[in-house]
Image (cartoon, rainbow over all chains, first blue to last red; front, side):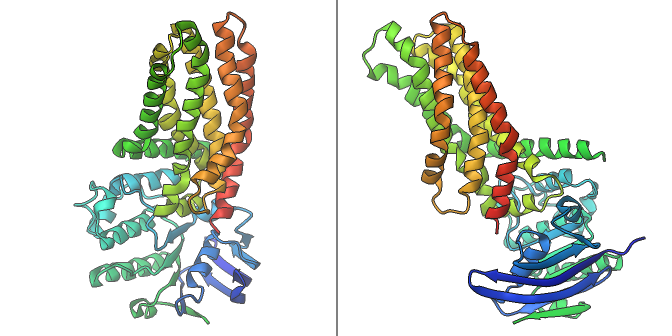
Length: 205
Length: 228
């Protein structure tokens, strides 16, 4: 089975006049967890957005399995799952309806997701409108989407935010399970909970 | 799953989702429709015209009110997706982005254009228009509003990153709606006067197909650039 690899070559990103990072190089392969550290405003989220393809870097290349992500976005996005500050769910629809929509967009998604909702304690609230859920429940729903997407590469921006200690433990075990199954995880977080499980660390100035 | 089947599923589920959201948030698409009904139905009472004059100006008036009430809905096309983060997930979807933008545009037409088309034969009664004329009016509006959705999608995606974009969007879109307005209303008037109206249909049909050929791609590119 071919090994998946995210390869970053000479990545440079400016926001306005300010250089967030210059000539950044790193690789992440199957089973690895990369932690991006840095102060507020150091460019952690921008780096994750650049890795996802949402942000065009000023210089450098992002390669997924040796292919530039710009050349085959669909293939890259099929392998990518993204967790950000914004939930990306419709407040009028229920958790289940939102997840079913996500499911319809991905050919490799997990169709039987009841056990995932159960694991994340969302089974009893799955038919409630997303808009009335608490911040923690919304975060859990976002995590459910990540698992359902069945993607190889997880890009997580502050995955533990709004979660209680139980929720954070679920994220931790979710990330560990994912990398044990040859998944790749790149995350930006301030929380020490996740630092212990990482295999590599990048610190942005 | 077959690639094309997967794209079709992505298209239909996006249309269904947007329709479901509107079903649960009725005011979003009822307000422009109510505006269309109220303004177009009350106008004949405000002007003192005889039956034949009223039916002569009817198509033009209904077309103008339809376009203006339709313009009100355009700014919502991608704005809610940007606010709740769905736009990022749309950009990161494994589905081709032009397909998703086209699905959203089509859903927008179903929710904003189609109700106007369906209600216009009733509104036409206020203008003393014959039933067959009102059907021609509905037909021109159905093609015309779909073309407006397509053109509006480009405007909505281009102005998404600007604050209070409604005015800018109207200024961008309104000039390109003028040919549709002229030919749409003229087609109905030609039919009303017993002339052939086919040339009008050819024009608005061609306009619609032209918009269809590039709107999803331009909207997708504008959304991608705007997200940065």
